Image (cartoon, rainbow, N blue to C red; front, side, top):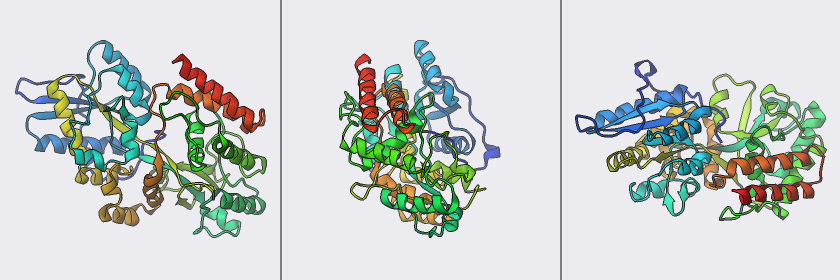
Amino acid sequence: MHRSSLRVAAVVAAAALGLTGCAAGGGSTGSDTVEVTVWHYWDGTNADTFDAMVDDYNASHEGVEIKTSNVPNADFLTKLRASATSNTLPDIAIGDLVWVPQINQIGSLADLGPLLPADVISDINPALTSFGTIDGKQVSVPVSANNLGYIYNKTLFEEAGLDPASPPTTWEELKADGAVILAKTGKPAYELFTQAGDNGEGLTWNFQVNLWQAGGEFLTADNSAAAFNTAAGKEALGYWKELIDSGLSKVGAWGELGKSEVASATDGSWMVGIWAPDPPFDFGVSTAPYPESGTPATNLGGEQAMVFDNSPETTKAAADFLAWFLEPEQVLSWSEATGMLPVTNSIATSADYLGWVDENQPRLRPYVEQMAVAHARPNTPLYPAISLAFAKEIEKALTGAVSVDDALANAEKAVNDVIAKG
C-alpha cells in the first residue's frame, strides 16, 4: 500500500536533472536506438533519484534510450486504460503492487522469468516475486518495498514510567503497557485503523498483519474464497475489539499518533523518512508485536515494474534495464537515496546497507529485519473490491454494531459475493 512518497535526502544533484518527455509506446528511432518509455508516479526525491539512475543507464548503454514520465497516482490506471485503447501503452509501467493483477488485464504483459537472469530473480524477496506471479508467468518484479512496524512515542512511554528502550514485542505486552499508559497519561495506548473509508484498504491491510500473526489467511491459495472466518480470524478481530473495549484504542479517524494523542501505532517504514528530519515527537520503532502463541508477520507494500509486450525490441530492452536496476549496486544506491527497503535479500542483509542504516537511519532497522517475515496481499484483480467489502463489515464490529462472530461471517459472505460476481 502506497501511502506517501518518502522524503529522505538523496545524494543527487537534483538541479541538474530534467524530467524527460514521454511518448507512450517506445520503439526504434532513426538512429537504430531503441526507445523505452517508462511511466511511474514518483515525485520529489524518488523521481529525481530514479531519473538520475536512468541518465546513468542511458550514458553507459549504447543503442537504448530510457525515457521517463510521471503520471499522478490518481490518474495512473485510468491513463493506462486509455492508452491501451489507442495502442500507445508505455513499455514499462511502475505502480503500486496491488495494481499488478489489474494492469495484467489492461494489456499484454511480458513474462519476465525468461528475460531476467535467474540469479536476479532468485535474489528478490520471495513474497514480492510470488505477488508478481500470475498464471505461471512472472509478470512483474519489485523495484521498491515497505512494510508495517510498530512506532511509538518515547515521551509518553517515559511519562507512564515505562522504558522507551523496551517497547512491547507481543500483543500481551502491548496490552499490559497500554494499561499503564492509559492510567498514567489518560491517553489511548495504541491507534487502530478502524474506519473503512472509501476504499477499505487502510483497515484491511493493517488487520491482515494480525490475522497472519495468529496463523490465519485472508483468501484461499487460489483466491477463490474468503479464508479469514476461522479461529485465527476471531483471535485477531477479538484482539482489536478488546483494545477498543478496554479503552486502549478508540474508534475514529486515523492520524492521532502524529498529534501525540495516542502512544503508538502500527505504521509504515515510509514514516521514518517523513518524520526523521523534523519529528513531531521523540519516536521509536520496533517490529510489529505478535501474539505469544503466534508468529511474527508484517504486510508488504511498494512498487512493481511491468513490461508491456509492445515489440520484441522494446521488451528485451526494457527487461535489460530492469535487470540492471535490480543489480546490487543499483539496489543499494536506490535504497539509500530514497529510504525505501531493499527488494533483494543480498542487499537487505549486506554489511554495506545495514551499516548505512545504522549510521544514517537506525529507525529503519526493524523494518529491514521484518522483510524476512513479510507477506504479500492476494494478487487478484478483484482485491480492491474485496478489501472494501471486508472493511465495511469489520468496521461494524469495531463500533459495537455487531459481534465479532457476526462481523466475520458477514465479511465472509460479502467477500465471496464479490468473488462470485467477478
